[in-house]
Image (cartoon, rainbow over all chains, first blue to last red):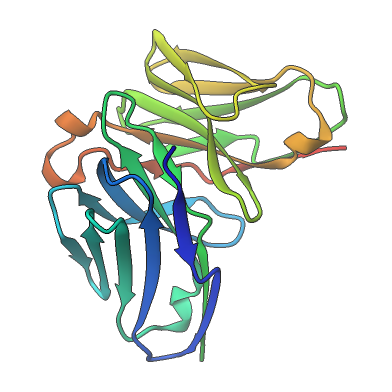
Length: 113
Length: 119
């Protein structure tokens, strides 16, 4: 059974810092990995999707990397802003016909002005 | 308008009542999902459907049922609600990864969520 872990559970940084969020998974037989952002009481917004054949994806100040062999992904946020404060979740899609996603519990990020 | 719409957004009910949460989407996706989110537990899959005639149980389907009325509509029912079903429920859609178009294949799109409280 796939297990997805995100450490730390919470992170607080001053505005302007570059930061890294971590995601690890136990089964490397994945189809893709997604990073999401969730604001309090809101739905999830897809940030980046990395296919299993890719090493990284970039969108603006965000960069996500994937190392399947070690079961790890990182989300790098450059020049953090207070508006980046949210919970960030990663999810992996299993290979095979089912294509089910398994989510981590998320990292709650607070960027202090 | 949102691509994935959930109704109701908030619902308070009593133990033993039947509840239906509805989801509709304008993405044109075949795949639809119902997830439950509890604090500290992340999101857990309740049911998923790959097309109108295909319904599958997820990891926590006990106490829930679903109906796929059309490609765009997927509803979740709690036949007899109990307090430990109090949670935030999310509907999501995706295309077929193989047909999704390059690097975006299989991307998941979520509704805003339905907060259910069972007293």
